[in-house]
Structures are given as structure tokens and as C-alpha cells.
Length: 316
Image 1 (cartoon, rainbow, N blue to C red):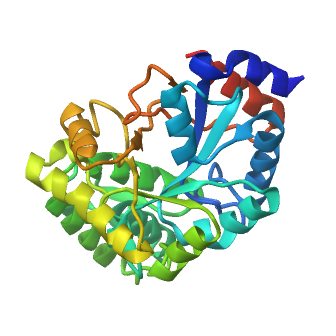
Image 2: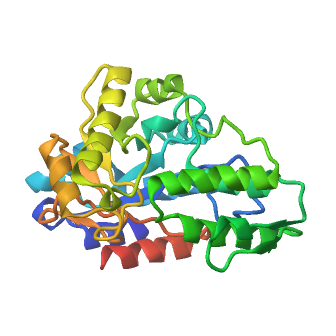
Image 3: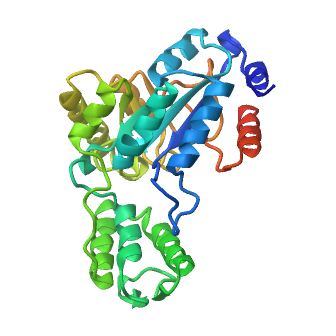
């Protein structure tokens, strides 16, 4: 009964709707700091549901068919952002077992031992042996002496720091990340992101690879030259790595108007990308801008609720 409902809401041809799901990580087991993160067990169930409800299509193929009005009814795509190592080690075998293809958007500056700024903060809080830390020297509004006694208080500290730092200038953000790690007296891990060999492994397994800039900046906060370099250099690095054209792009953070602007859409088009994805909720339609395809993933772990939220998203 569920598959016909999705097909009814997304007929084929010019009336079709493309459901594109976004993931970041697939963990081996539940994280006490981030219990909402997708685990191996969760992702296996989600892949099973998607395969039974939708026609799962590679994103590059789906974007082309959507523009042409030839997308099959009930079409869906799976995407991953950033380039975490667990995408290769945990998610890939599950995708292969279900016979499903996904597209992975890689921020190339973090390959081979790099680390995203938010993960530096998360791991600093996770790994510290301190029960309390004074962060008033950082000069961040509302953040001073931080309690780290419980997983709940550590998560609260992480959330507060991420909110304060996320939209700061790139250089200031990097400085604060280093200061926080020093104050918390931790050695940060260097194996969170994929190696270049793992990216090649995904592609050799038949997965799609897309560009996601070099350093994952907020494009709207960069000038035009900087934004173009981030987009183009990330793509060029992947093309050199894979020895093939990279035609897909994902905007970092991905909220239109806040994280990227029409200028950045025009840059992506001008650089020759065939399609790009945002993190705006909704579905793609034949009339949609192929360089701003919406993405949405329900946060529910129960089958019926996951299904209902997907159906609601299709009616946005």
C-alpha cells in the first residue's frame, strides 16, 4: 500500500517529483552525545524501506530525467555530504547489499587526515577529561564556565559553541577551534574523514561523486573570487583524483539565501555543473532549478513515521 502512495504523489513524466535524501554519517553504534545520528542498523532499515517504496535512481541520471520530463514515478536519490570515512567503511557495504547507488559530495580539503571545524569542537568536548572548563577567554557571547559532567551537559556545550561559531569569518573560526582544543587539553583524531583511496573506492564501487568545495565555507560569506575558487578547486581536485568529469555539486550547509545566494548558483552554472543540491526541504520537479534541487531526510527511526514524514515532504 505504501509504494502506490508514493507513486500516486509522484507520477512519471512532467508531473514527477524527485525525493532526494541527505545523510552525513553512518555510525557503527549509537553515539551518546548524538543519539539522533544514523547508525549501521538505522541505515540498513532505511535502505530497505526506500527500496520497497521508491525507484532509487543515481542523482546524475535522476536530475537529467527530471529536466527532460522522463523521471519514473516514485523516484528517489540518496546523497551524503562532506566525506566522512564511515561513508566508505559502514554505508557502502549496506548500499551494495541492497543494490542501491548513492552520491557522495566531498569537501576535498579534509581528505587524508583533515578534520572539519565542527568535528574539532565536538571531539574536543567528547575527549576532554575535564569536568568543567572556563571558556570566557574566547569572547563568545553567553559562553563562560561550561559544565562537562554528563553527556547531556557536554552536548549542550557543543550545541552552544557551534551556534556561536558557525557564521563567523573563516579565519576567526579556525582560531577559535584551536583555542578550544588547547583549553580542553586534547589531541584530536585525524581519521574522521575519507582518504583519497577511499573516495576512489566509492567510485569504483559504482557510487556517484560530487563536489562540495575545498574547505566547506559558507559561500554567501565569501566574495565572488573566493567563492569561485572554492567551488572550482574542489571540483578540479576530484577530477584529478578520479580522472573523470565531476558534474554534480552540493552547497555547503545548503540553505538558500542564508548559506548561498543566486550569485553562487550562477557560479555553479558557469563552471559547467549539470546539477546541484541544497538542503532546502521539498522535492524536485520538472519546473525546478536543476542547480537547486531540494533534499530532505526524516529524523524518525520508526518505519510508519519515517514514511509519513516523507509523504508530507512530497506535498510541500
